[in-house]
Image (cartoon, rainbow, N blue to C red; front, side, top):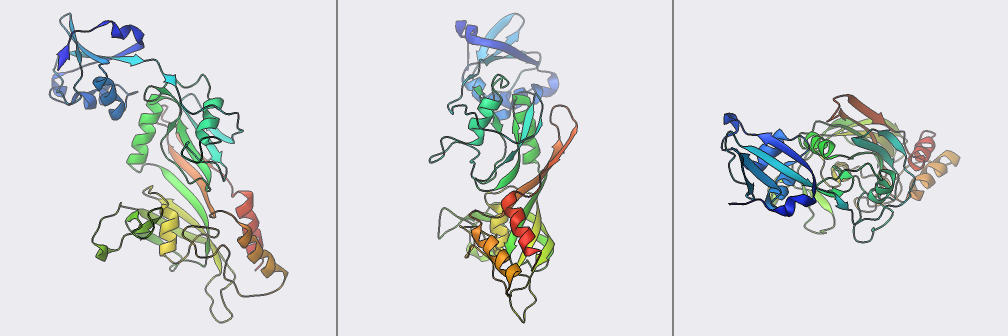
Length: 351
């Protein structure tokens, strides 16, 4: 459907355009725009088309195109009128951030435990988004038409470590594609009760909502008669500590490195619990807060008490690497274990 262009465009601040060639003929309009204009994602292009912000121009005649499914016509220039970014709903908050890398396109931070990534019921303030809105004030040209940081992945509120956030539409689009294609190097460190068997391997098991507790995720077995989301975790024990009994040499705890091929909700926590090695301190997928260890003396007491004192799952997003979606440079950042996990490791090393 098309109609004559109106004065509505006076409220837009910039215009972007793309010329359709014979090779583009018949391509969906939203797809064409997202492929030819690097700052537009497919979903953003679709929204703009539906809002009447896209017009076609050919031989001096212009008309608005509001059907994202419409096929483009060769020789026609499609013009996108970009609206001015509106204020974000979350309020900026002056919260200190541990910035690991930042340029005009993206920012990487070391998220502390207890900080939610995005506002949600029960966590409307004090989130990473609130902090970024303050830190990046005046640097956000608008993602999806809203003056906000572009969240492309998340880690749990009580998981620490590296997160990358887009500051521009182009970076948001590029990072989203990298995560969708699993073209990101992500390494996590976890402290577990016991150690997995074998000590290195891959868990390739789909994940879905638990049938028993809808707040939890669970591995989907082949005989369940339902499908889960594809999930792959590569793991390797970097160290093992103590043993669980006088006669059994199985470690009481382990430091596990995990590499993700996919990024499902609670993936590492679910996959390691499936292996029988839940995370120390995990209140959801672990049966006990501490560790089961054999021994006595000061070293034993210090190790077991340190594990019991942890009030969150012992999981840290240790490193993140990728090719910068705008500049093309190789980006790699890593962070050491947070103090609470490092304290447990030091105690376990003395067992």
